[in-house]
Image 1 (cartoon, rainbow over the protein chains, first blue to last red):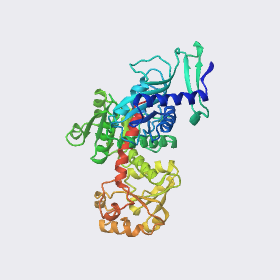
Image 2: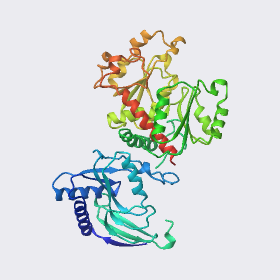
Image 3: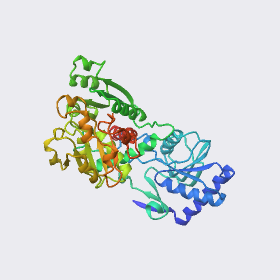
Image 4: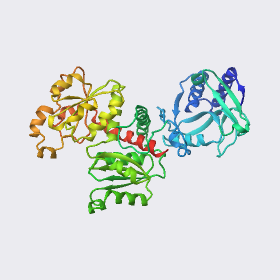
Amino acid sequence: MTQTRIIDAAGMRRTVNRLAHEIVEKNKGAEEVAVVGIRTRGEFLARRIARKLEEIEHHPIQVGILDITLYRDDLRGRLDQPRLQSTDILFDVNGKILVLVDDVLFTGRTVRSALNAIMDLGRPKSIQLLVLVDRGHRELPIKADFAGKNVPTSQLQEIKVLMEEVDGEDGVLLIERSPSEESL
Amino acid sequence: MKLSGRHLLGLENMSRDELDLILETAVSFKEVLERPIKKVPPLQGKTIANLFFESSTRTRISFELAERRLSADVISFSQSGSSVSKGETLKDTARNIEAMKIDMVVVRHASAGAAHFLSRVVDANIINAGDGAHEHPTQGLLDMFTLREKHGSLENLRVCVVGDILHSRVARSNIYGLQTMGAKVSVCGPATLIPREIERMGVAVYHRLEDVIPEVDALNVLRVQLERQKRGLFPSLREYHRYFGVTKEKVQKASRPLTIMHPGPINRDVELSADLADSEHSVILQQVTNGVAVRMAVLYLLGTV
């Protein structure tokens, strides 16, 4: 197994900065924008994006946290049951432009679950997708509106996003497994 | 982390980690119940049968609601109007359920051990919704959830179960569950309604409410089952109320405001005075709300493995 650091702490800061500016550019401001992060790392990324939006636009941005466990399509048949946590969206999503935030975009199934979860909370004006890393291999017709970095990967590779709040440091690692380790 | 068994038959043999998992999961479901759309999809495609061989309104409705909110398909049988009243045995009923490809069974029965029995003869997940005077685990769990919500933690919380302990499955599930979570449980009631061996469960026994009230944080007041009076276990409702009825006047002796719980339905001014049942320290209606969340947690944890 080998690890390559493809984004370091400074790079991550610049990427978050740029993504926040892209949100403002696309939506001509951030008046109706609210940010929703998918647990776990999407939550911290969402908070950083919101803070940056507040700096740029000088008004408060609402942040919510989404737990998608109940909406997963692989809930049954897993050996370990994922721990169910709460969705924490305290504002009304109706009429908002929701920027859905996750760390890595891979098959698209997590985003599909998140979309269903949001629809059960109300009817936002629109939903836009922001990810730090898009690693390809989509299994559903889903595409990011804002992507920090496109990293073409093979199925043997893995992307690991590190965030200060949970991992003690910021960065993105590309992890390479040899074929014999594939089942790990 | 998941539950170690495929069924919920009682709280007696559950570990602290398992009880914790259920209570934590229920917190998430309580949030779901506050949403505009209170339905989530994890049990889509599962069929659940509610078999109530003994009458119950609250528990049955609470289970049905929990099942529907998890998107399961639900069928309910009750004592009257089904083949149960035509003399079919529990085993035959179970076999028929099996033949109908039902995934989970919620069962309430007058005989202790009915849920255990079903778990041995059918393949479905079995949830005990009360078996005789044995256990009523989801009631125990919702009582624990409500106490935890109100007091923050169950560790060292002092809870007294008041009333007919002898015939009460609610009392047993409370004692097992609360003790596992580190609470200090006592019971209070007439000597004729307290099982003789109960002290071996590590429970302090009181025969006077006045003695126990200054010593506890919460009272779980059990319903007086009126049919017990006919068997001579206590003299009259009036006398029961005088000695064991929980009233505002009696709870004023507490060191701080007591939390009042009741599994329902209440006999107002028998085991619990009406003004106390409606007071700010009563969490009786929270218990009902929490019952749905706790049952969703149990169904979800057993049904999605």
